[in-house]
Image (cartoon, rainbow, N blue to C red; front, side, top):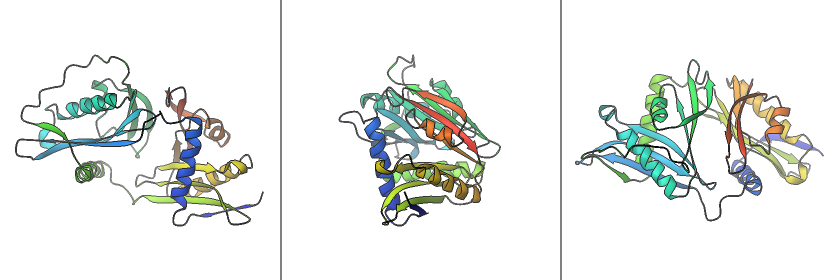
Length: 290
């Protein structure tokens, strides 16, 4: 069929992401009754002073992610971060989650997660340049032998709102920027394919972060238009633009149902494997030099 690839316009990215989610859910349906939820925790002292906190996301597959975790420098090594991890795990278990996922850098907190029984899935070298990124997991449906939560004394953990989430993310970003300055703001890359009638039939959404690392958030082709090379053409277009914006490698995380497509397109290096995510399936960490 005839088609044309062009940049996305307003609303296209959201549509592509929705269609990609629907396609994924058709293969690996969300657990009945489950929905994505966000829990924001803060730690304060008796004067209400903010000491730290974390953001926990529970997913529709009954998995959970600690997105951000931060403790003010003057209050570190007092068990606050450990208490936040335990509270996040407690809430995730309460929500029925069987798996917790965490990403961290060598200038962040890997030893802390090691201490709490998180297992390494993948090490991405040279991201950012000269550093390493780690992807870790912990099964929540198995005994972990953790000790009882540490006594925080006069400190307390409470649920908070978006204002605290923004504060946490800002503090963590400032820390990361001090360790490894970002070269530029995030660069969005969104492309679509339209047929001869101008109908949107496929698209790819992602971008390149300030450390020159590209990521793909969604890649979708309308079912009636598959197996005609459109997805590969969109992927190549994304790779070219990412490389033109400084990216030197593209890391992806396909599942067992689409890993063959990425292998066909040159993603031959497997850097990690996560079994039983989602339940009954496997996720692969793969990369390709650009």
